[in-house]
Amino acid sequence: VTGSSEIASLFQVSQAAADLKQFCLQNAQHDPLLTGVSSSTNPFRPQKVCSFL
Image (cartoon, rainbow, N blue to C red):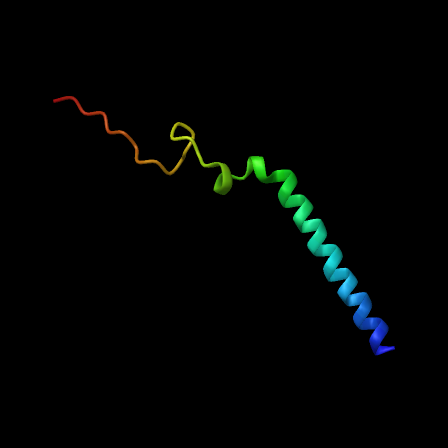
């Protein structure tokens, strides 16, 4: 019984890994860590200061 339980557990891990890999490949084009962030849409860029002297 323990052997079949371990096999079922390994199958679940393998299926989860395959699902995760498929998700990553399908969404890679939208991942800012892979594609980068343009400076115009980057909310963390330093703000430009407008000052009149």
